[in-house]
Length: 447
Image 1 (cartoon, rainbow, N blue to C red):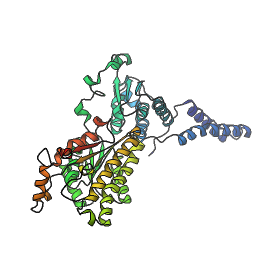
Image 2 (image 1 turned 90 degrees about the vertical axis):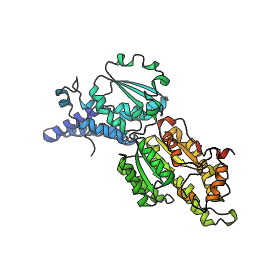
Image 3 (image 1 turned 30 degrees about the horizontal axis):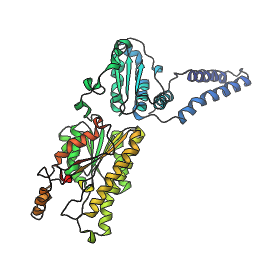
Image 4 (image 1 turned 180 degrees about the horizontal axis):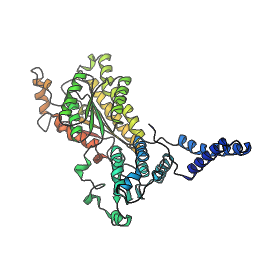
């Protein structure tokens, strides 16, 4: 339900007073018709200006809408009477939608990286400006009332831009003393240590192909770092089993069934995640298939199936999740490529797989450069040969020995060797990295 609108600008007060005057004029038959007519014309002109601005301004984000609703519905008189605030704080002090978008626009067009706000109230203006800042931007809001910091912080935490905001309570001069001289190496970026910057608390992630293998390991890693995780797989039983594993560890999770080669299925996946958690911050596109055959025997059906999942499916997922991320100005996409996109692993023959994974690398590089200035980073991970139960079959025994002879590390990769990488690429610590292919193969591609 939309929050009640309150007058807080001169124009809004003019509209309010004109509306009251018009009501009085209507209720008194003795008022001349010319007066009623002119009042109505004035009201029509005045009331149309704000609505026009509202319609032509960019829509406010969900966290901003929630902050506005929360502010308008709060009993500020009671808060003062209970001693929670030092001053009587009228809800009319809140920055509105149009004002917020103007502040956001000013931050963007000026190229600001640092913003100082003196007097925050409930933070609508602060969050609006934070949405206009680059990912490494910072806004310091000085506020006398500690209660207002407590009031705004949960909404800040729900926004991908809230982390840019630091609220200092107390007299502004005391709060700001020495602030601009802070050494981020010593004090940490935005006051966070390196390990804190790797945390994913409050983020929403999905992992495709998460029912087993690498995807399952990624789902656990992102969840352990604090993210809510949608476990996506073609097999609903596998997805549900991994979601239950995460739940046992206290990780918020949900199972989603999707065929990533089909656009409607991918859109349904995105819609289901957004319906449950409001947005998507991290997209981990991991699902893939491999069918070995000699190149001269590779059928078009095998080629199309492999590309349909590995490259086309990854693109569909990037595009569907990317639209959400671009709209909110923040997102991290991590695609699973392969060492096979760099070298030709041997002696197995897998033309379609190698070519599709090389395509994933180029897809990642292209999106990484195209979307970074809109807040979305796109990177990929290229694992080497990963140890799975299938590899230990009697049939593949001789092949494993051949692979091991090509790996300087002397062993196959474990899925756990890849977990820290996906957390890093999903976190704030990797904000300066985009279009990168992170190769984790024990040195095999070097020989």
